[in-house]
Length: 533
Image 1 (cartoon, one colour):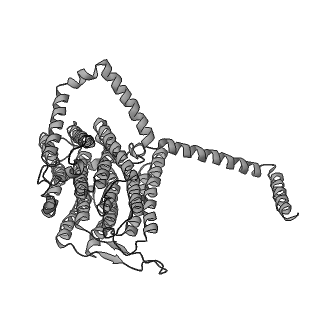
Image 2: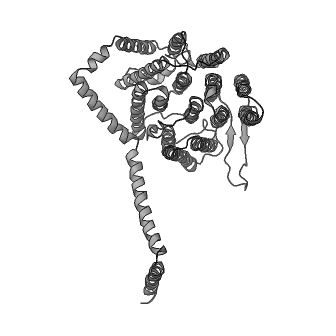
Image 3: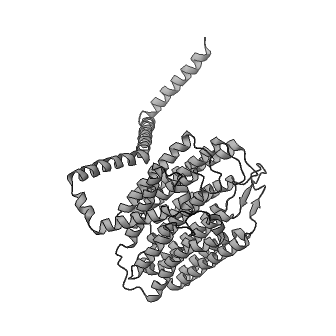
């Protein structure tokens, strides 16, 4: 039961804080109670890694005694990393929220973030397919409930429902794996999957991550806050990454896996470009998630699980720092430099294994697309972090201190995981990958600073090329988002609805009784005609 204590604590603390915040405590005292609660869970996660206790196995859970499927919830050395990153992100969210105390609705934001984190931990703990199906369903229900409650807009509700439907389709893929593989007693990591089962698992993961169809048009404009919105957007991808880290990747790529690989490549490059050119970090947040989802799928297909973990660290640490950053200082540039260098993947650093899945031996043309995508993602991080922020002049010194602690915590978390992961990644020695990445970033920054790019953009043939690229980009966006399919299905639904409305209005009108008698006579003639020779 020790493994489930973080989940119980987060839910219990959320209920207590919700009650005390409404009736007893001031907003400052409520924040202090919330910060202390999540910090306690954070320290407990470190203790769990030291002890690594046995998990919880639930047998005969079905009320009628039908079925022999097991529910197993347990941390493994790999899945603990995802859980620790998620809890660390929650702590950073609460700590950095000190400079946003005057924005209102803080109590719902904090307790909602705690509940979402608890649900995410529950999914990461899942060690059987049935447990994964249950926890993914809980995540979907909680997320759509939060979105429809905090956002009062019909278009946003429609977007949330569409994304929810796509995720449910991904969960149904995993359900089909349970049906056809007949796996009941084995954990995910110990199970042997057929080619068909692996294809279904890959399809379900791709649907839930938003690689195909891309979820970006549905979620790009959701007006959710930095804190709750950040947790909301990270929980679902982390649960999928943790699930894939327990699956044995395919040894060879078949036709279906190759198609998914190409779509993931397009998603990574497309998401990286859109992230870089986004107006701000909150608008570009879905593209950040999309790009890393594509990169993780590619590394999974290449059979590099450690690379998946490293890319997840970059996504959460750099992404969390960007999305939670809302106040600048004179020393913040130093933080940005150290953050980019530590996440570049130099040997003996926490994310050095990222290059194992991104670079093949020998290097192929597709590898350069992956390097360019990662370079654009880091450029976007630098651009959005160094964007001038206008902090509230009413922010007190203690608020700035805890805000800085939250961002620094994100920076040191990967180094803490290195205590237990060093023996697994010390053999990954890649110098040319991070060096090439930093050279590309520095070159593009110098290129941008010298304003040479503006002179090039003024050339007529460059403008024409950009116009053609923009047209191709819009076309690809329409195709890959499957927006045309959703519009077609909606048109079909409207046509069927109008036909039904016509019959209903006809039968309910003044001549409804006569039409009913006519249909009854026709039905009787058909029945009698079949029986009389």
